[in-house]
Length: 499
Image (cartoon, rainbow, N blue to C red; front, side, top):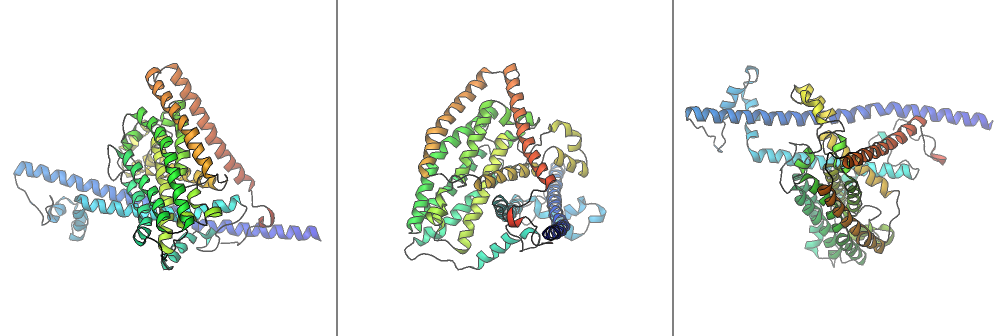
């Protein structure tokens, strides 16, 4: 009797699992359809920019030949009538010309780019918050969000955003009202501005600054100061403790992080992030992390310091809920509380973007970019294939998301350390290690030829180790998927079939 009951329950679970798998199909179609639609829209916008640039060049040539200068009311070099003359016959009607005419102005292009960045950050933070809940739930043998939005509660973060917008915004009676209200925006705005100089591709950057790395680090530093201001202005001892911890962490981790970032700068000879990324296009063996042993150690050193910069476990002391209620965010509620979380997850992407650009091949795939030169100069389909196989913003975003996942994974795996242990780690361990790494990289650059046997052997060993680590992660994922590892205990049966 018990055996038949067990088999019946197992059959019910199999049916539930089948229903859940069938419900994945529309969710997957929606997700990948949205990704394809966004990519096509961005490509179309880039093609429109390129087309208008060609019109501007052609107009300048006409002015040089005829001496006739035609200016619009706003001082633009092209009129809508001229654009109509350049358009094909089937497109020569006034609404289309008005779509192209504003794109010649840099202010309009900047407004479009900033709007796209804000949209990207909003979607990414919503996805990252949902992802954090799901990863935490599976690590702790739970399900996480399952109902809101249907499939695995994908709209839970969106519902939370709406909830935060409607909650009451409280200000403590004894707080410094100006600083208290300003702190969340001091946290989010600089991190958003970091995207101005963070390249998603060779030409996919809002401002290609020669000192782009310094600009991004400066923006991240202001975000840290906002935490200190929030802790001070809240007039709460737990918030003040959180702000003091953030100040201590910042003094501790900034020096090891700076020493680690000097290594790729020395190897590339520039602070321009786009230029550093383009130097790694020859294949994964030319990624900075595989150039020499000191570069590999510098990557690990930077990533550990980046965890402290983003206040991620095991260095989430400024908001340690088991000790300080919520740390510097204890008195915040509603929209401003949500802005702090937006800033945290956005900074996670920014530090991952720096790690990707400086160490992990930037927007290039592991394949050498030279293999796809024919595709890069072809038509729309060929260029799309080049972007998927060799280089493009999708590779950059994929690498950044992988590093963000590692940060989430570490949070729910490692225990929180004490503040004195944090200071000891960064000041007495990682700071001397950073000095050794910087000195070793300097000697390597001056004493070891790039095509010498020592450099080749070191590069081969590091590449082999990297391939083994990547294959191990992929192998674990494949084996877990093949064996259908499930939650343990009473949650072994799939809940909410079709959700």
